[in-house]
Image 1: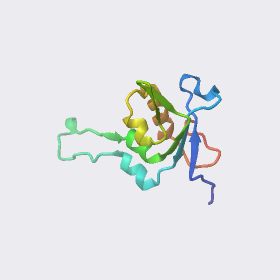
Image 2: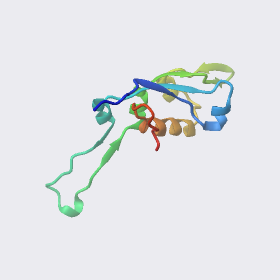
Image 3: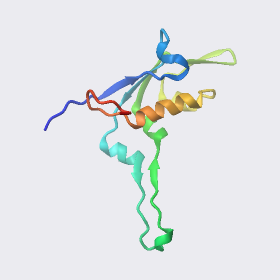
Image 4: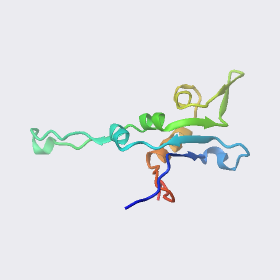
Length: 125
């Protein structure tokens, strides 16, 4: 069996009408390898020595960690912080600059969480 995949893509968030903007924020990203995906999204081992009523299944989802690895470049995004223009062009700046709206971060992370390298496949359905 053979199918076509992409190495990366570009995501344009909907946040605050961004998609309709003349110069929308563009998030360039690469796909995680299966090994990387298993580092950020996995089920912790169940302690079988514990009483049955105390056993629990814990699923780890490090969406920020995954997004930091996946994002390769950000275009057309800047903040004005106390009069100074701050370009947000990397994942590091996205996560460490004060004033980035949490709704934007949540939209980016949700999209990247389910992004698939398969050509003609939608990450959310």
